Image 1 (cartoon, rainbow, N blue to C red):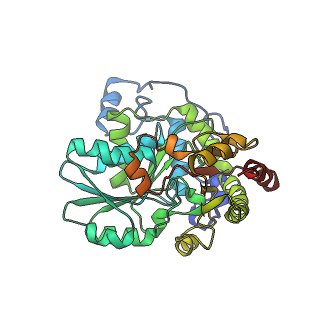
Image 2 (cartoon, helix red, strand yellow; image 1 turned 135 degrees about the vertical axis):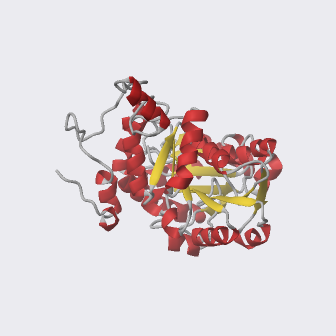
Image 3 (cartoon, rainbow, N blue to C red; image 1 turned 90 degrees about the vertical axis):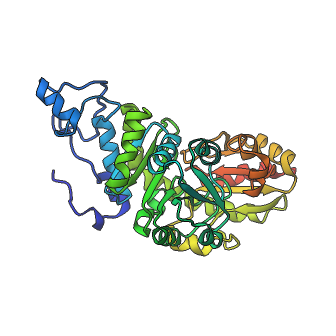
Length: 396
């Protein structure tokens, strides 16, 4: 069967199933076979020399490239409408390789608002060791004044982990372009189903593919997509130099996960909207951070750049850390665990888990208080989840 060529005319559910997919040339298998090998035969002396010099295409060693991993990369490139993509061993491998491949000593990187704790650590603590200066800004208003002739990158998450900050990607792209800086967006929370940053002018988009891309909590990986001129150096650094390659087994799981990505993200987004509206009215909760609520500061921007508002939210409990403990320990259907984007609903206390390595000062500046709980809504029945939240909050 011939696959459709014009992917831009296809809907996202169709692309998730068919985009970048080809039956295996040898066996005809529809699902991408797992090529479990470390090395590949190149035939003869001269063929090997040509492959390693880059003169000829072909696989050499699975750290450099593997057919199963390539299939996943091609599918991600289609979903993000990117020229190419590179898969990495984890989301943090993707983040780190992007930062180190595109920045050098003497450069400055601006990061906007709250970030995932691991990303925050690399930008604030690791980059300065190599002469790269991190510059924090709270929002787009302060971004305009932060650019210097040394600014080479603007890095943003939106929605941001864990307080769901929203930033206009079109504005980030425009301001970065005018300053001659590369714009990078962590699109883990939104996924390409809800937001396509490259279509909004962003240069590089990355994911912790462990989350929604995999979607089943059984694989760890990352992916970066964009123009070839930007992705090729990331590929070289991540795979050949850092050695952060994705396993073909993980790639197969993620390729499987992509097929149901739109269905899963839509289901959890619809449930999350209803749950956020309920939690916003609960007397034990001071604030709900969810971009689908009209009370959210980024609601209008989110409405413009997101198809739906996603399955992640955070809630601030009035009783602080003890209330957060009570709430989390009394959940029965929702599992207490880090990570997000699984079929299962998950909840955690960022201050003592995902952001525990971040200093208290920076945590509080980012809105990560002792009473904050992050919730990742899964694909369970909405009413069952609502009942679990109601009973867990009953005595607060």
